[in-house]
Length: 66
Image 1 (spheres, rainbow, N blue to C red):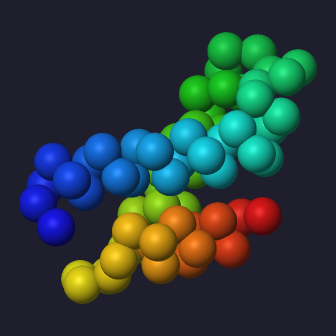
Image 2 (cartoon, rainbow, N blue to C red):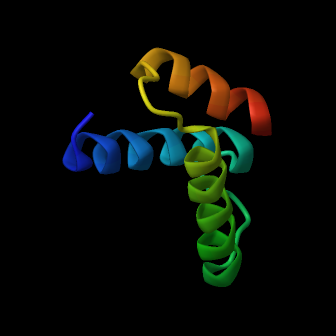
């Protein structure tokens, strides 16, 4: 996976986690919104391993937070 593919995929997975776990940001103020999104990005980074497929990465990341 190239660095660009990693960044794009990581951002998409983090956004999916954020949307699911916050109900698309309902009732979050801007600080909560940013803090939670950073946590989602951290969860995604922690589930990445060399050679992981995009599908397996989604499953691993979503499984940790949902």
